[in-house]
Amino acid sequence: MNKKQKPTILITGAAGALAQQVINRLRDTYRIVAVDFRKQVYLSDDIPSYQINFNKRVFEDLFRKFDFDGVIHLGRITSNEETRMRRYNANVLGTQKLLELSHKYGIEKVIVLSTYHVYGANAYNPALIDETAPLKAAELTMDLIDSVELENLANIYLWKYPDLNITILRACNIVGPGVQNSISSLLSSKHAPVLAGFSPVMQFIHIDDMADAIVLSYEQDKSGIYNVAPDDWVSYQQALALSGCSKIPLPSIPPGLPRFLAKNLNLKIFPAFLLNYFKYSVVIDGRSFNKTFGFKVKRPLKEIFRYYRDMKNS
Amino acid sequence: MSLKSYLKDTFVSHELDAQLDKIEKPVGSLGYDPWGFNADTNKLVLSLFSGVYNKYFRVQTDGIDNIPAKGPVLIVGNHSGQLPIDGTLIAYALASRKNEPRMPRAMIERFFPTVPFLGNLLNQIGAVLGDPVNCAKMLENQEAVIVFPEGIRGSGKLYKDRYQLKRFGNGFMHLAMQYNATVIPVGVVGCEETIPAIANIKPLAKILGVPYVPVTLPFILPAKVHLSFGKPMKFEGGDTTEEEVTRRVEQVKSVISDLIDQGLSERKRLF
Image (cartoon, rainbow over all chains, first blue to last red; front, side, top):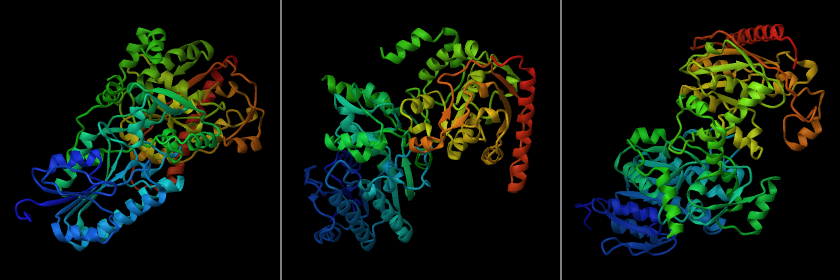
């Protein structure tokens, strides 16, 4: 091992575009080991990459073999992938295993990527939700329980094992080249569903900026929970228009009707359990992160939407 | 060109455009703020609303310059008229003020965000869900906020109870003290006559999930509206008992009651 020369970081979710951006930023300074629950990806000759289930015993062998200094946990299976049970196993039980091993092997820094979805989309949400607000997603839908539970676990480890220096990042919508979550798929599509009469305010962060935020939080020793979102806002329907998507309005009342349509039309990019996020705003306050880490996004909203528009025209 | 840009170019006069551009608003790169306010929609709606304000309700204001040009302000008024017409008229009065106009935010009832189209439109013209966190964050941002401490008790009251102030919540006073906000009392006269309700169909309201379903005329009457703004009131923060807070709330309520009486005495006819 070259541990003495370069500190080693385990990065999960390596098959995702965000992890690859983070790896590109860190590979010169750190020795990187990449893992993914879904598939094995080739990154380069000097980056060992594994497809691994965190719940299998063989996962611990990686900790024995590489003597990690830090963990960047981006490998959350998003809500448009896999079944609820598989997501729970991977996101909650898998994360528990990861944190348990991190504690056992003396890891000194852990970054956990979470999502603004944990706050829940509710008609009574105030805007600029800060980190102390209750996480109400689980009361709205069983499908987001894994996101909330993942956070709860990370929180427990955060106060129980301060030596792990856990930083939890609750990001707004991450979008841009290579991102395959629901919102990025919607912006990429030519026709996107909207709920008639609802256009919630949304926040978007470019994948490059999000990768910068993750690197910044890894390199600065400031554990805690932070929202990550730019001080810029746009309505969902305006975002679609700027991305060159034509809107397909779904009837929004009675509330059961759009859920019925989304379920029965099997709209993967507009899943029934996320419908409320296209109805009510969940605007988070990212100022604490910006101030603590001296962070400012470099890619404005217009550039983000231009990318999606140009993609359709090319 | 989008429909919104087309409508804006067609209906928004250069004069109003310039007037509203004078108002500083903390919006992002696409003209939105975190509560959904949108500069272009606001211009368009205000432009269309100017006829309603000037010709339909023939609004007369008194003491509009009492509202400070800068800093956190709570504009506290009596609520009436089933729909949030009163808040919209106060907002228009301040936005169209000749000297140092401001674009205030109106706190609206909690069921509005669930109403398709209307909820969004209200957000885009600056109305915000009546949540204390929202109000606190806006005062922190140095905004002027319109509040109706009677809530639906005021807006949903029947015509026979017109101009009788209902119980005021204490929340606004706590916020005024915490953020050192100036309180501007306002007496609204005329909105009670815009949608006079003789009864409230409570079972139907329950089924529809709305606070009230008034039995009223199917249109809005062109009552003449008087807005009487009182002198600025300041309240010291610090460790204050709830009893003292209630006393201060009653003080504001009493000023509003006087302003209503003043408006009623000055009113020559209903329409």
